[in-house]
Amino acid sequence: MSARALVVWAIAAGAALAAGSACVASDSSRCGNDLVCPSGMLCAPSGDVCVDADLVTSCAGSDDGEVCRVAGYPPATCLAGICQASRCGDGRVSGAEECDGEVPQGQTCRTHGFYDEVGLRCGPDCKLDTSSCVGRCGDGVVNGREQCDGAELGGATCFTAGFYAEKGLACKADCSFDVSACTGGRCGDGILNGLEQCDGTQFNRSCDTLGFAGAMSGLACTSNCLFSNASCLCWGGHRCRAKSFRCDCGKLGGCGCAATK
Image 1 (tube, one colour):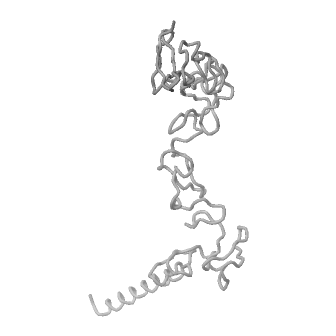
Image 2 (tube, helix red, strand yellow; image 1 turned 180 degrees about the vertical axis):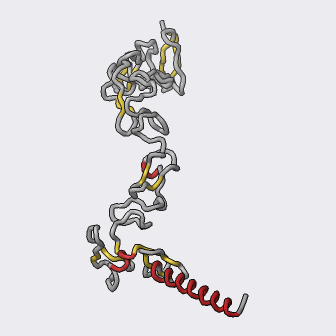
Image 3 (tube, helix red, strand yellow; image 1 turned 60 degrees about the horizontal axis):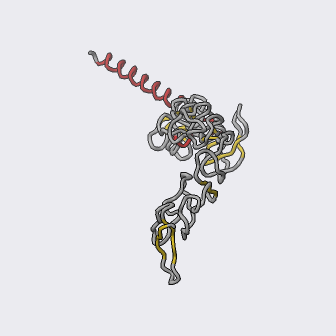
C-alpha cells in the first residue's frame, strides 16, 4: 500500500471512530462505574442503575418527598432523586404495582394462600400472577389440611362427622366442615340419643340398676359416650360382681364384696 493510500485509510478510520463516538454520546449516557445507559434512560443519582430519563429529570434539584410530575402519570414524590411515578417495566415496584420484572423477595405462592411454595410470577401488567400456584382453600379440591373444599366433601357425611343422621353436612369458607345443619344428635352434645349409654353427666342407668349395689363410686362417662371402667367401684379400683355381690362397708370403714342374700 502506498503512503498516500495509508493516509487516506487513516483519515477514513478516524472519521468512522469519531462518528461512532458521537453516536454513543448522543444516544446513551455513561455512569461513573462504566455502566452505559441506553437512549431514553439516564443514570440514577446513585450512579449504579439506569432509570427512565423523565423520572430523573422531573426530580432534578428536588428533595426527597417533594412532588414530581411525569407526563401521563398521576403526581408522585421524589425519592433518592427518582420520581416514584408508577411505570410498569422500569424494574421498580412503585405506585399500584405488585411487582416489576422480578417477584419481590419473600413473596411465594404460600404467602398468597397456596399450599405449595413455587409458581409465583410477575405478570406483564406488573401484578403478581398466581396462575401456576397449586393447592389452596377455594380451588374445589380437598388438599393440604382441608376437611372439604366447596361442594367437595371427600365422601364425608354428618354420620362420619359424628352425628347419628347422615344428611346436612356442608363446607365452610375456611374449608372445614359446617355441621350446623346436621341432626340426630351426637356424642358430646350432653343429650342422650342414639345408642349412647351416657353423654357428659347424663346417664341412662345407675349403678344400682346395673346390679352394682352399694357401689361407693358412681357412674363415669367416656368421650365415646360409654360407661367408664372407673364406674361403680367398691374400693381401691375393685368392682363387685354385678347382681351376685354387693359392696359392703363395715363399721370400721373397710369395704368389701359380700354375696347378695
